[in-house]
Amino acid sequence: MSTNTAFSQQLVELIPRLRRFARSLTRSAADADDLTQAAIERALVHQASWKPGTRLDSWVYRIAQNLWRDDLRAHRRRAEPLDGLEVAGEDGRDSFVRLIEVGEVADSFQGLPEEQRLVLSLVVLDGLSYQEAANVLEVPVGTVMSRLARARGRLAAQMPASAGRLRAAK
Image (cartoon, rainbow, N blue to C red; front, side, top):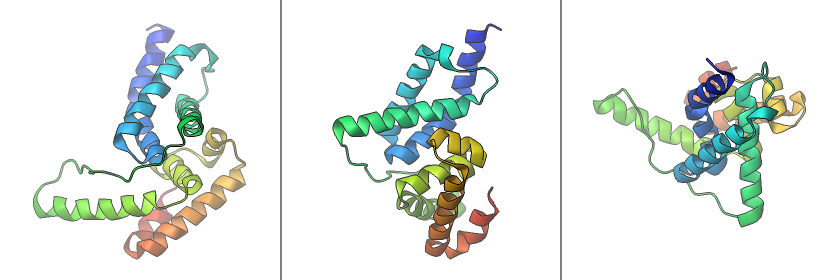
């Protein structure tokens, strides 16, 4: 398999996680899709600047975050609230209850300040280490840790039933 093919395959595998990260930035499914596409395009164009042996996801997240910041500066757009959420693989009453729970978590998540929302997304949802998240966000590791603690604290205060699950996620 050629290097270009392997790189492209890794990008394709990254799309769902990148879309989730973009959604945490944009708060809009449509804008997240646009940002995901732009980040993938930019990664393909600048493939030569990625260093093999480093984490591709961190590099592409950084591209997405920079694109989002550029777009904010250029257009000063306001974020839209989350629209419909999907809960796959469940049916009936359990699905309805799960949808309500997911909606409550999503509302609380979107209510966090951007810096806390991004750290929580990178560490808890995408599984990056504190150091990797710090590299993506260009902040010290201690800043990642404090933002994560504040985000978890705010979510736990808003959703006491979910507090144990939030503290357990590392």
